[in-house]
Image (cartoon, rainbow, N blue to C red; front, side):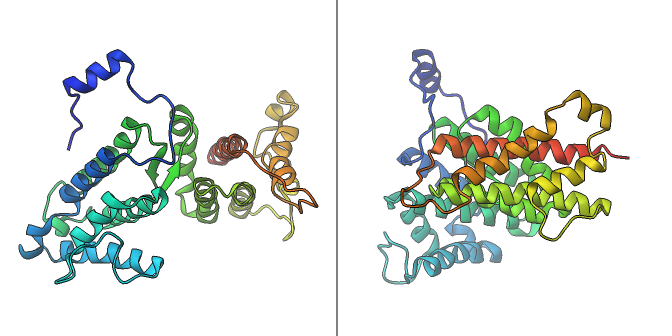
Length: 313
C-alpha cells in the first residue's frame, strides 16, 4: 500500500520535526504497528486461514515456530492465549510488546524473508500482481524505517544497519546487487555476515568478514578467468594476480600510480590493525564509525572489482 503524505507529516517537515540522525536502540510503537499492517496486507490475515489459502495458514506458524526454536521457548513472549494457538496473534503480540530491539528486529527480518520468498507466487493469495505486491511491501518497510529515523533496511534476505542513506543507495546496494551473481555467492555471504556482526556490535568479527569478502571476490574473478593463485594467497597476492592479468588495463594502472597501494592498504590493513591479530595485554576497542567506514570501503572496492571484471573482453 502506498505511503500517504498526510497533512500532519507535511507540517512536521515544515517545522523540522523529522529525524535527521538514525537510531538503532529504539523501535517506535507506531513503526511496529505499521509493520503489522504490512503483514496483514502481504502475508494475509486470520480470515484467510479459513478461506482456502493453505499457504497463509502455513506462513505464520513457520515464522513463530522458527523464532521459538531459536529462543528455546514453546511460545513467544507476550502470548496471552493459552487455548487454541493463534499464530498471527502470537507473532503480532511479540512484535508489539518485545522490549529487546534486536529480538523485535529478528521477527521483522524472518517475516520479510518469508514474504520475499513465498508471497511472490500467484498461488499464495491468488493475486495476479503477487510479485509487485511483495516488492511494494519491502519498499514500504524500508520507507517506514527511514520515516522513523531507524537505521535499518531489508536487503537480500537480511536486515542490515545503515549509517548514511546516500552511501547505502550509491555503494552498499550496488555491491549487494553485483554479489547476487552466482560466482560471488561466498563473497555475498561474507559481506552480509559483516553487516550482521556490525548490527550486533561485533566490531572485530565484522572487520574479519570484510576482508574475507574482499578476498573472495578476487578469488572468484581469478577462478572465472582461470588465473592461478596460491591456495594460501593473501589479499596482497590476489591483488597482484588481478593486476598482472590486467583486470585494470595497464595504462589505467600507470595513470593511478597509487592504485595498488590503495587496494593493499584499504580493507586488509584496516582489518589487520584493528581486528586481525591478538590484542595483547590491553583491550582493543574498535569504534562503530571505523567499522562503518570499513564496510563502506569494502562495498566500494567490491563494486570497483566486479565492474572491472564485467568490463573485460
